[in-house]
Image: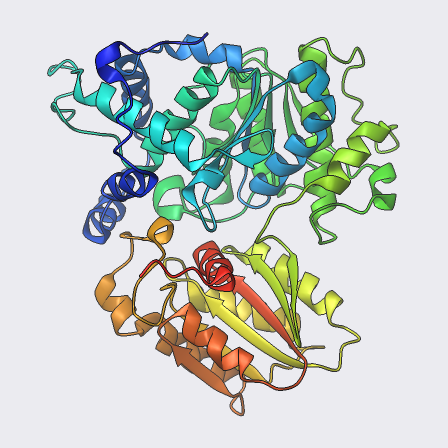
Length: 495
């Protein structure tokens, strides 16, 4: 279904992409608000879903309209983005049948447009601006019931992630996408993507402990939230080797929602496929993607065979090709730059930092180059992550230098416009509080270590590029650090 806006809603070409990004950034929750939400302990908030339904109505859609997008819905703690990318890679091999594939993921690395892709490519700046202001103007021109939504006063807008979710639905509807893949933002049950009514398949990547202030402190609570995306009659799939307690809850949730949950093994045939995203652990995500794509194509009557979740299942060559061609920057990515080899993987949970560290260790096992660690994690338990990283790498990798940076992009103290983050304490960042604390942690682990604290990613790069010999650099922790690094690689400082 495509909707046309009245003439008075016509896009004003004088409003640029930069204007759209500035308006979007104004919707970010500030640090004080986020701390207040955390302190409140309000984890179960159906208002998130009701709001998204209402915002959709105000821009001209019923949530049932989104059923035409034929959505695959993916959640999990670690690997849901990679699973979404693999699923997209497979489905791109069937574009003669599908035509337009939408992908909605988060967070972005360099440009917010990365979150909304069609046929693998981020939408253009022109389309982003056009559709962004269509939604913006429509929300300005409509109102909500004061009785039902007293906080949604005229002129108010959804928060940053909700707005982008709303925008993605609008983009995919207007562009005529007939297959879409949605990565959950946080959790599932109360996530703003969970207004999807009839997905073609639901997937759960590896469960772990993260976002505890929103999802709960135990794997059972987290699994309950993740299982909230299950829908009646829509087959659900999860990777093999989930934590036992979490898997039990997922099975209970599937039963509650009147659907099936299938554990997807590591398919034997994928062991001989060079996956487009590096790392041995990616075979679990690739296997889950195979099952999701198979179910989706079966649902659309493109493939007749139902999902075969046996470890020895025959994987079609088209699926293997799609998996091998998949690209996903910032996840187990290797960049060669003269004498420097960058090993880059955003990892913000214990499970992901251990996986990333294991990947780096395997990659440099035979390298005699000097080793450098570049790390930041501004908003989670950075100390615990550093200890996990050290435990994995202590036997086999010795860092000649360790650098703790903020997520600030440039030495001038500014962020790239698409990477502005208001959800951290500016004072904490300015004083390098996290970075100084991490230096102390590392010194306690290795008293002889050469450790630097720097105020920007550009400054960290300057230290690394000063080496006149081959070096291997492990960049991990925050995806905001990874994204900022890739922006610095491009060298496009907007100032």
